[in-house]
Image (cartoon, rainbow, N blue to C red; front, side, top):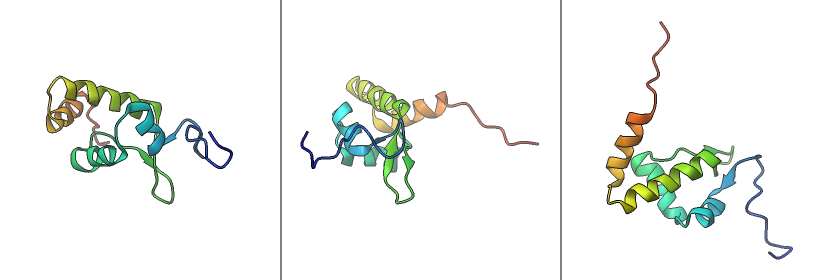
Length: 94
């Protein structure tokens, strides 16, 4: 890494990674990551005040799981349904 190139594994927020770092770690193109978020709601990164996406280790693991499911021939809409079923339902307070 050159002196002028920023360290992509150390974002401003501790424990969170910018999209370019996640793309390098997972091998998933940033455009694809954005599409998975926008089209299917498969990932929900946090955002900086400027709107930049920041991914947690849990997000990275979820992306890797998405990749494995897709490699098994499961479509992205179906993966989204699987994830929805796995998420605990939030009951509104009475």
